Image (cartoon, rainbow, N blue to C red):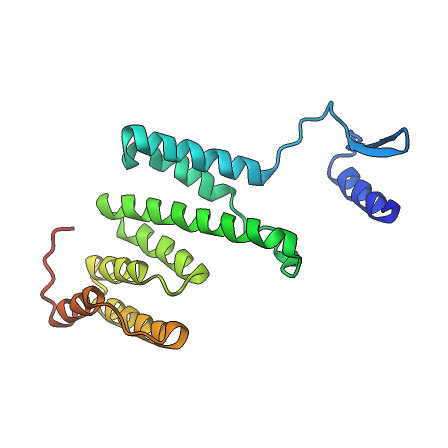
Length: 192
């Protein structure tokens, strides 16, 4: 324990040499209560809860800025270097799911705002974390189509088919297949 505390103290000292974060008194280590310590995990959850509240009361348009602020805080999986520690796996999965919900909400708003290039980037981030999200594959297909990249929309369908077969041993839903057929025929209504 002493070696770990010493290492932690050195890291914190390198970050902020003006303050002593970990103190020792009466045979106990404790965090210095005079220093305001903020955890990115807590900030992320606060922003997410605030965005949910705003969305519930005023709609997605009013909440999107807070969702974006929450997404900016997420820097990767919780304790990603400690993936084999059981105690962190539940939090890791929970935080990742929250992040995916946030990206989904933002991309949903961007679809409504016809910001299809931004939608593409967000959908790609979601699929990096969960490539079996068929709804996201469809959103990506539509966004490619809306910016005039029908070929990429069709290729995205093929990726979706491959992923679903490989990961889940299923075929795409009728909704996804119908969208593909419309894209292939170039007969999609251009409402967005």
